[in-house]
Image (cartoon, rainbow, N blue to C red; front, top):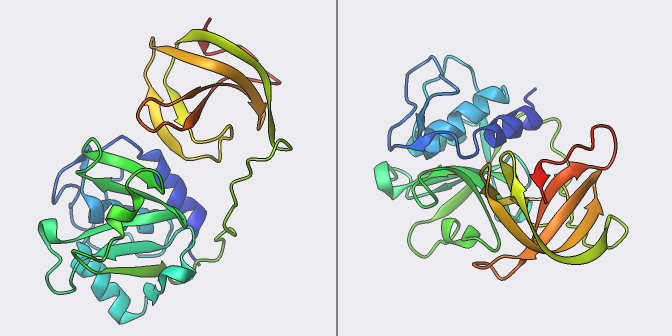
Length: 249
């Protein structure tokens, strides 16, 4: 039986790592999981291998190969969008003519969020949710989109609902100030490590914020994103154990 957790953990570990190159990462039977290049389908194939849904010996294929696997019915089965959950795959393109720029694929982190290696977002592996071009990749107006589930997925979690209630986190104070990062910091859609990563600050960058929150074992600074107009959150220290902050205020 395969593991959705292993598949998704690997996919997440590649966030902003490989450079998108069409045809990248195709090295036959030997999957170089941490190569410098990937494209959408080689990224999907490597993730499926990490989840043990397809054999290590299988070629890192194309979108056409994903269609073929679904037709065979041994490794993938077709589902409807209404059934989509974490670990499922979408393939955009006309079967038989989805090669090159005429097809695209990626993995669902949840219904409403995908992770994929693409040329549209910094030419690397990124996530997209409802607020960040998610529907563009699933839009049937130019090419059809189909959905597939790895056969043997035995640990797919139930979809999590975003909990924005004060029982999960709370505001500590309003504070109009800034902090200087000392390491790479993820920007999240809400104050939890389960939240989608929507951006990232490098080391030694200033983050200007207007409020402070606590939740999910961390203290967070928060601000309204200039581009999105939505509230964003950045963790800067743990609430217990080693509470050394990774920002200078």
